[in-house]
Amino acid sequence: DGGITQSPKYLFRKEGQNVTLSCEQNLNHDAMYWYRQDPGQGLRLIYYSQIVNDFQKGDIAEGYSVSREKKESFPLTVTSAQKNPTAFYLCASSPRLTGNTEAFFGQGTRLTVV
Amino acid sequence: DQQVKQNSPSLSVQEGRISILNCDYTNSMFDYFLWYKKYPAEGPTFLISISSIKDKNEDGRFTVFLNKSAKHLSLHIVPSQPGDSAVYFCAAHAGGTSYGKLTFGQGTILTVHP
Image (cartoon, rainbow over all chains, first blue to last red; front, side, top):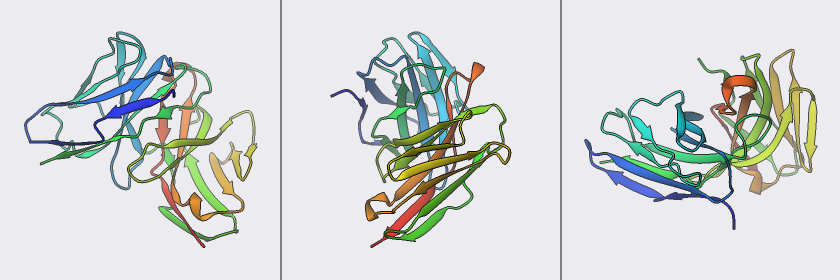
């Protein structure tokens, strides 16, 4: 089945540690995105990528880093510089970056800093 | 600066009745609007969309209305079912150089009572 796979579903991190969230898609989509959801807030864009080896900062990129070495994969690293990393992280993809198209989401990763 | 706003955090409706979820936006460059449904600890799933060249789009029990002059859109669910209980997010896309990224509202929790 085609889809977006995020792993792990739950992740615990100690303060001061970097952690990497995985996102893989087999939909052959060009564009991929990372969003963050906090209670009572909408989804906020962290980073997005329209093509391999290219990515752009979203609205809240500070403390995060990404890479896009393969079309299928768009991992997100939450660094120790991120002040409030506890959140629900969602990866998404869309078939093309421009034009009218919906984004398809993975099941999310709940990150908790302990 | 919240460019997409869902001013009602929650909505409670009786089964069989109509649910109306509202969304306002401020950015005149938005030209494509989407509604997503989300269950706890899961990724959002796409429901329905509308282009700015239309004022209505219908898909089964779901209808989205767009009032461009008021910068307002609404999602109607008729008849409402208990399985519709979820968080509903309004999202908007601006064409041109925004590269297809979506701006989300804060979400509205819909509860449909049997």
